[in-house]
Image (tube, rainbow, N blue to C red):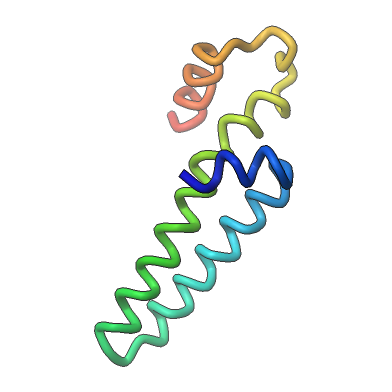
Length: 85
């Protein structure tokens, strides 16, 4: 919900960096949590960061591929699915 417009405004690299920072902050909060409140806050930050990363990965894959000029959105999904195997 937030990552798309922010990615359009700030660019892919900044959006991915923001997602990674939120994820790291969430992981740090979870690691040092002494109460369930801190643990839940860490989970929220990490989840927010992962949302940024997931929304930005398809754009990054499509421009970093050597076939970037021939990739459609459907083939980008196929390409990212092939990377996992």
